[in-house]
Amino acid sequence: MPEEDKDLRARLLQCEQALKIETSRRLSAEVTLREARENFRNALKALPVIICATDQDGSLLFYNHEFERVSGYAADDLQDFPGLMELLLREDEGPCIVNDAACRKWKIATKDGREKVVVWSEASTAVPLAGWRSWKIGLDITELETVRAKVKILQGLLPICASCKKIRDAKGAWTPLESYIAERSEADFTHGICPECMVKLYPGIDMGE
Image (cartoon, rainbow, N blue to C red):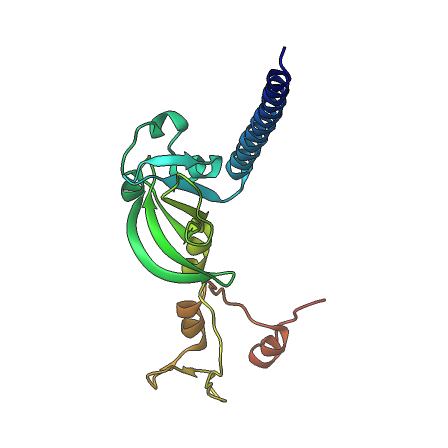
């Protein structure tokens, strides 16, 4: 075999070996990337906050267990469901701040017709992900909003009459203490007489020990 042919054959063998090594390296990298993506998806599914991603048509590409729990829609309901986010997001409550992050509060409609309040943060702006046109992080604050609506807080300085104990409201009207507190808190009143007043009002009655 001519010397030139031997050199050419050796070079071809080297190229084939280098190609095999590169192919093996790339296959290994692809496997590692797929595993990393799968681990990432599994981690998102297990998070205790709502995660959902949509494509250009608004169809859901990804959603996690918390999304299913809050919305009431199971995995089978969500297959080929275009525009679900528009169905869920019933009423825009405006911007809000949660843990120093700019969010938006929405009232959403669940599958069974209930209304819930969720704060959403657009994560795709800060962390764009390939194939996801938009993805959001949401937090169900329905219970918190319900508690806030029920709780009324008395605060500030209250002008109170030194004699009859009526309180002057913001309009200048004097209101009995019991009425003022009842209107502005969850407290209610039941009446009794303390021992000191009992002695003053009914001195002849023995209260006993």
